[in-house]
Amino acid sequence: MIKKIAVSILETAIKFILKPFLCRVLTSFSGMLYFTIVKYINHMKNLNSKKTKELIMAILALNREKEARNFLRDLMTEKEIFELENRWKAAKMLAEKISYPKIQKETGLSTRTIARISDWLKNGKGGYKTMINKLNIHHHNSSRKRSIMTG
Image 1 (cartoon, rainbow, N blue to C red):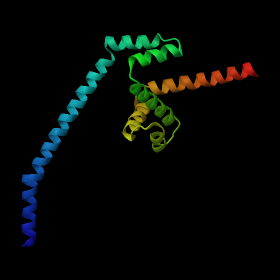
Image 2 (image 1 turned 60 degrees about the horizontal axis):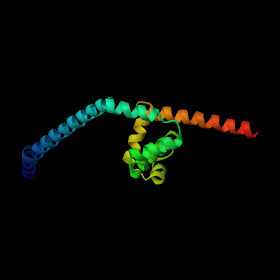
Image 3 (image 1 turned 60 degrees about the vertical axis):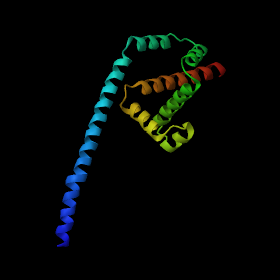
Image 4 (image 1 turned 180 degrees about the vertical axis):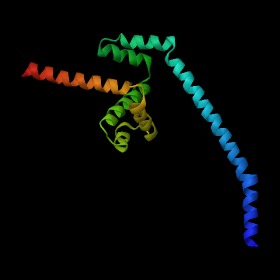
């Protein structure tokens, strides 16, 4: 008798509480998923916009460190520059297989941001890898030139 009552209560709870709740959650989730996909598609379109291309051309035109520093400072707030510095540092540390806790401690970035950077480093467009490789080659060549010049 108690078992039948318990089963009946469970069936009622599933029918009138859990099922409508799950439908709302799934509907909300699919709406969020749709919004995320649309936002991503619009973002990708923006990366190919005329304004973005002009910004990229301006960055490519920078020839000296001072020019770049001044351009970045005029373009962004100090906080935005600091955020980019930390993301770049995290990418380099991830490439060196340094742990998330150490990266978080040194950069102040959240583990979510570090995970996103890690994902882009592994599965992105290759921008992080390209620049890390270019700067490592440049660093090694500069060190060799210095040692040749001083040696």
